[in-house]
Image 1: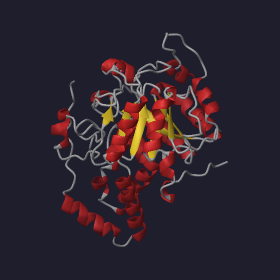
Image 2: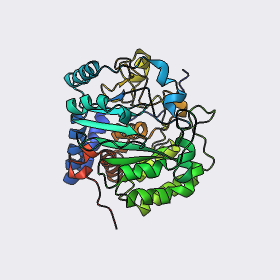
Image 3: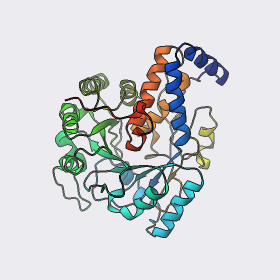
Image 4: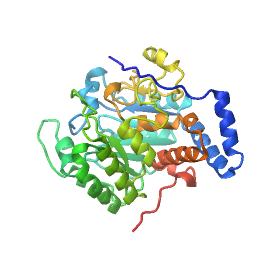
Length: 375
């Protein structure tokens, strides 16, 4: 696997960063309190990601899971006893949060339950075709994938495993999850879908849900991050955020970093800075030791509940602009936001917006609570 290596500016030293932070907080007890809450959350939540199954009930175009061969990479385990033992071992090792992905987790609820019953914080990623029941899954955060918006979503996602197509996938998800506080739609923006961004976000608002932005990468193509007019795409995303500030959870700074792949300090998102890797894999030894932060203890497991996966998504670092990987890059990058009080506040705002995405996190602090819907 070819991994592009970018030259990234070095952050301030630990001593310099501590001195800057101390100075910025000296006259702002409100910021000190917010930072204490954010750090406490970071201590409580130690996450992992698990591929629950290699099966899925649809075949999205550009899906990194199937384009990357993850469905055949390991032998899937279905034994409930082994899966429960795995979840219990995670808990014993200090893991408190699991993001459950697939394939499609809602078709294997018997594999979801051991994690829900063992770990306090669960996020489930779904395509929305089937509902996640409320009973027994009351505190699970549900992230529903959405590609492009409008008719483009069906064109990209509404394809059965046998190759036939259907329509109304987004509408079906809206029907399953109307007024469901557990839900955040994960809306992958694409240049082709810009005319559909506002009406799609409006439909999510009217359905009583919230949305976070992602970036559509057409995995399996020669140019998965192709975008002809970056400024136009960014402008539309920011316009819709401003129009629906309580529905679009994503912070404007995050939206710009997601679409451009850049931070204000000149850093570019890529393998050398991405924190969302399985840190114990030998392949990452050089990355872990290059001076850029990683998520302590983070690991991604295949559907055999044993094999470590490269990272939280495809492992195709040159073609990745995954929203949660970009968010984690910014979250561990506090030291880049210490050049002014305003910049520090920006970091706190985007960090709080990260936690606001997930239902279980919204109850941990008023700072993370979901914003009331504007009528």
